[in-house]
Length: 446
Ligand SMILES: [Zn+2]
Image 1 (cartoon, rainbow, N blue to C red):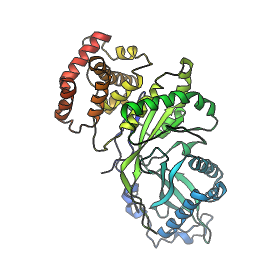
Image 2 (image 1 turned 180 degrees about the horizontal axis):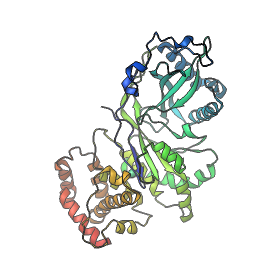
Image 3 (image 1 turned 135 degrees about the horizontal axis):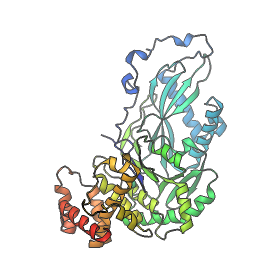
Image 4 (image 1 turned 180 degrees about the vertical axis):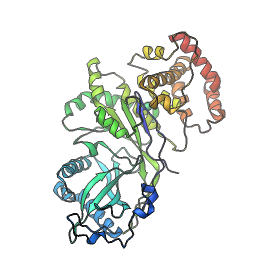
């Protein structure tokens, strides 16, 4: 069972439950929320209407043909060729920006594939789903999938034109920065940076702290076979749009997104794009927040926010293993800010001022992301503190290795595997760890 996009906000961050993937090929009506009788059959005859909006719905073969022509232009055509597929001034301008950005990012695979007919005839045209398969050079182990739904209108006797473009669902990898803004691309040894056009000076100023953060994470956690991370630097509103989670109660400072990998391509002349078990990571950071931090100088170990999200990106492992959220966020938050930053105040705030309520490990996604900003900050601080405790008591390597090990433990219903791993490295069971950590926190920060 493949996972859809999961996302993690960092600094304040989130791990969102995965959405089941949408099967490829023509979607049944219930999959797109329509009553079965709302979808006209092949014999529907609205195409012969005589109004200004008269159009001929696309057959599957027309969709395959259209996407093949779009793919050819994306591969070797010009921006004007691309713009000619679309209608409406705003959409054409947006697509020109999209084309420039997607062509500028270095990719080993850059390909459009026909996936499904979502609705044969909406009255405005045929809604088709297609996939941008893209493998960023040096960064992605397999090509990633970003899905689009395009409304295509074909006037009688004319070439079809795309009149609307949107995402498909929560698991679609949409939107990326190139869907929202004009993009400047910066490629270094370890980063592929995408930022809104016009922010080059800010990107240049932030670059040393981004590179040093990623270099440290690669050194301490491994690269997972990558040479680079793809990082999108954006403003707050764009960050929220890319995070694509309307339920968030915390203000995300960054997000690490997992995109679906590309599975099998459609057979020649057919629709349907497969999903791979492998996943692809995208980090998104609040550009303006980092620019504000520049006033304090670049931390030698790199920006804490970049370190936090990079840990998520390189730790992204088996999609079927779901560690408790405190392991996932605590490891990233501790590593992000364990040096170069002062965390005492945040840690103190996590303790009961009266010293009566013992610390507990926050164990629900709501604590971190959906209840309130304050609850989120406390959840991050208390879970990071677990790893600060482990580092104080057993050293950096043990704290890191325990964190990495716990993210791979798959039997959290009864803590047996977690206990075995912890006892081997620290002599403590999970229960004992929780007790000792709470006592240490009270003694240190109470
Ligand atoms: Zn996080």
